[in-house]
Image (tube, rainbow, N blue to C red):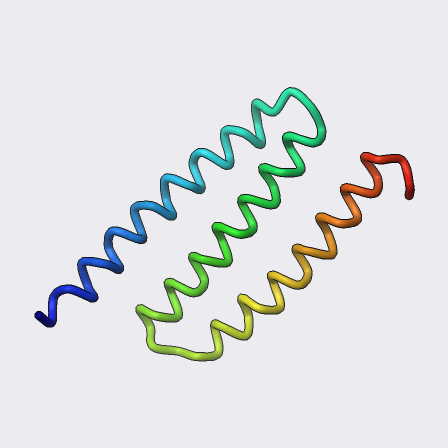
Length: 89
């Protein structure tokens, strides 16, 4: 039964890796600026989940604080990009 958390961590690592690849492809191929902005936001959400995954693997709680700060900065950045695309900035 001790192997179950390790298996779950490995599976989630594969899902995070697949998500990073797909978000990077959309970031490169996105036909419009809005598609690229959504892909960048998706990439930041996936990287936040990667930071949390690393915190679980390493057993360090401080990484969760880093993920929270990164999430707040990412949200502010996405709002700024959305306002720029809309023409409000």
